[in-house]
Image (cartoon, rainbow, N blue to C red):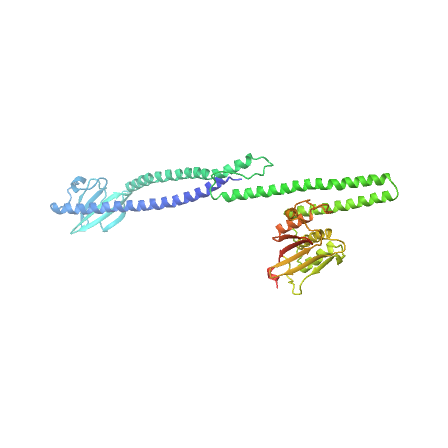
Length: 443
């Protein structure tokens, strides 16, 4: 895999090269045009200068074969000059002039071939004279190449310097990411502590925060697993020991004693089964497993299902109160969790209510919330113990339960954005569970 530094360098370097190449091409083309223009202007200026000198000299006659020097005509070095009549007779020419006469028939600038050489010439007509100045195209090309080469070297140096600085700058910019990598590499495999990397840029801070949130979730998952393991080892030891003891007694006895021992062993197995079910449900609720099976239940359906499960089909022990104008909107939570939470509240109430009394379940709804109120007729609970009701395996006195029912309810409440309140009175405990309703179905 290509490293991030190499990838960024290739992308940004390609952009740099493209921009520098376009800028250099533009600059060199403009430089060439300006240079050609300057050389043409020099030809024109030389022709006008010669015209000014000729006005001060006697009228030139026919050439006597002795050319005037460039100094006499005031011509810069490297240029050829020719003075001819309108009829084409060459009157004066400089020593740098080619052996063949310059073509002076066309005024202004034009290119011509003389003695197999390219010449650039300028012809000025003044009175009955034509003044022509010219220079070799080869000399122009040599000068042009020298100037373009001299201008290209700084551009190339600047380009390669920019690429080198780009490589170093990207490496320096990625240094915080490398520090994060090194910090993660130095951590032990079982470490879930937050990662601390000082002086991180603002762009990498969300990455570090997300990484620490992941560590936090992993720590919570590991903690739940340890708690589940510890709770299971603690709570299952006693039922298993009791079952083993009763089975040993049944093996050594006969008659009614053996039957009672087997009955006690069966009760212990039932208690063990319930405790395991509660532990597994609590682990699923506190974990990230989904309970959404697509089933939607209204508040009334949740109440009736919870009553059926808690009373084992005998609903005479639970009295349901609900108004006629009850909302038919579905609760905004998985139906299995809503039923489980209300069933555990009813189970807890049934364990603390005398056999000759009923547990009362009241149901009310408004536009957005369903309210379940469960009331038992037990002895109540001390106000200082209300805070312990939802703790795992906490029992009030000699309660026959496992101490997990209300802990499961609290976990469901936290997961599904519900609310749970307790109110202890001398004539019993009142529990209120509020669950949200689906707004698009609320009446």
